[in-house]
Image (cartoon, rainbow, N blue to C red; front, side):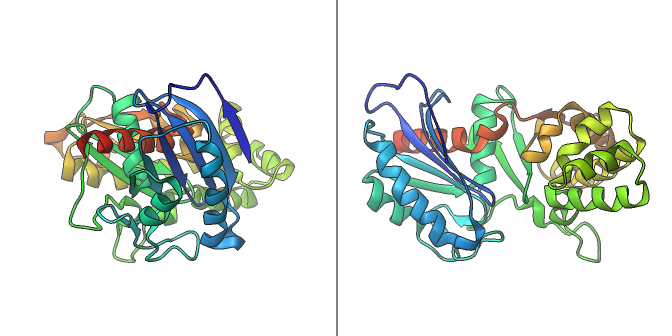
Length: 319
């Protein structure tokens, strides 16, 4: 666990944001202006399943609230949820969450209103209001990490389809074989592509980096690209093409003004952004050229917790 502190807000003018992902759990105290003032971060123990994550939350949340009086709690959960009831629909990463009444469970612990959303939805809200999508409308956010997810914010609000409708971009079928973006654009799929590439090019700079520091392999792409490694460039271009094909469906359906790329893979930075933006124009109809702005998440790994705090603050005002 890691913890961080800054100057706290006055009592009652903050909310708590919780990020429940496939690899990390974060609980933060933040303000409606998007400032995180205190944080607790844990690694997710998948062997402990959902019960282990709930135990971490049950321990950390009361401790985090000792010196605060938060108005509400917002949650970004890594999978489909029913945002009306706060119930988890399904988990694709950690066992034991299916059908769990997360909102009601957290409300008993916190004693304040709890609002539960898909994590990509709240990340989209955070980036649209406080991050790279500020002033742009609509904003689509795609997260490329342990999974691939998406969220759409239009006119300042999260778009919901028929419950539990979310922008589950990671589960699009890209061809008749059923291939999905999660199988070709997620962090683990890029790791797999790198392992295959270096097996055929053992003398490449990328292969040397992987040999010196195995897994997760995607973290070695940036230094290999900086060294001008054509093997790394080939891996990046292949991933960017799949991401661009995926995002072309978003463009044709929703025509966002901006697409924000987030998640662990986005930490590759400008090489990834430029490659995706360059490929996207190939797959977008003429009437929509030059297409939306493609930008990197400004909030980086804080997109979900900032978005969760923003969700809680806004929903509290509406209630």
